[in-house]
Length: 486
Image (cartoon, rainbow, N blue to C red; front, side, top):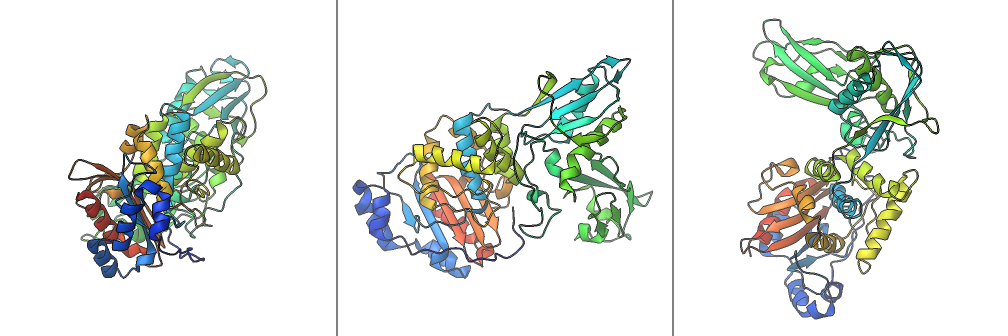
C-alpha cells in the first residue's frame, strides 16, 4: 500500500557493501567469485536504468542468488546487501513465511458464538456472545453466514444483548490517520480481535439511466447510519475520470453518508471501499445491521464484554486456512490481514496477542534459523511503517530457506506474478517472476523468485530508499529482466 505523506525522517543510508564484506557474508569459499562481482559493480543495464530514473547508486540494495544456494554459495549479484533498509510491504514476506513455517498452511482462526439462556418460541431470554480470536477474513459474506447460523439455533428475537469479546488481542487503539493523514483508506485499518470486513464498507454504484440516478449498495449494513440509496447521474456525456471526486462525498460523519455531486453514467458499475470513520464502533454496527437485515430482532444493545467463564459455544465459525490468507496478504498487500498473521505468532504461544509478543516470536524464529544474518526489525509485520528494517542479504537467505521448505508451494503461489496478477499486474518486466512488491513515498521494493531462461531459479531482492523512489519501477523491472537472462 502506498504512503501518501512524505517521510519525516531520512532513511538511513549505508556505504556500498565492500567486496570482502560481501564475500564474508556468503562464506569464505565464495569470496573470490563475490569479489569479482563486487569489483564489476552493477550491470550496465541497471546502471542505465538508475541514470534514467535520476536515482543514485547508493539508493538501491540488490541481491540475486541461486534459490538452491546457501551461505557458502556466491551470489550472482550483491550490492549494498548488508545495509538495513526500509522494505515497505516486502516485510510481509517475513511475516507470512514465518507463519507458514511455524503454524502450518492448514492453520485456521476460530470465532466461537455462545448463547446464554433458554430459547422459547423463537426468543432467547439472555445474551449472545461473539468471541473474536483474530480471524483476518471475517468478511461480509461470512458475517452473513454467522448470523444465519445463529438463527438456526431457533433464535429470531434476542431479549438481551449481543456481546462482542475482543480480549484475545491487547493492541493499543490507533489513530487511522496517524501514518499518512488518510483515515478513510482501508489499508490504514488497525488489528482487532473481532475484525469485520477490515473495518470498511463497500459502496457499489450502478447507473440507472432511465431513472436518472445511480443506485448504491452498501456492504455490510450498518445499524444507525443514514446512507442514501441513490445519487444523481451527471450530465449526459460526462467522462468517468475522477468519478470519486465528482460525487463530492461526505464520509467523515459516523452516522451519516451524503453526496453533494453526481455519478457519471459512463463509469458503468464501480466499487468504492471506505474505512468507517469510527473504527472501534464498526463491529457493533455491522453485527446489529446484519442481524436486523436478516429479520432478527434485538431488545438490548450490541456492546463489548467478555464471555462468562464456563459457557460452552453453540457453534464456531472457522476461517479459511492460513495458505489462503497468506495469498490475500501477498497478492494484494493487505496490511491489516498481515498484522493479524503477525499477531497469530504471539497467540500460538498462549494467552493474549500483543505486538511485542509477535516481535519476540519472530526474533526467536529468525535466530533459530538464520543466526548468522541480522534479524529484521518488523515493527507491525506489515511494512506500513517508517521504522521497519531488513537487509537484502537477510531477505535473500530467508527466501533460499523457503525454497527448500515443505511450505514453498504455498509461499510462492501467494506472490504476484509479473504482468499477470495482484500488485504486479501492470508490471512492464519481461522476465518470468513471482515477486512481492512494496511501496511507500520514499520506498519501492520487490523480492521473491525469478525463473531464468536457463531453467534456473533465482532469489531476487531489490529495495530502493530515496525521496525519488516513486521513479524506481523501471529500475526494478531492469533488475528482474537481468536476473531472468541467464
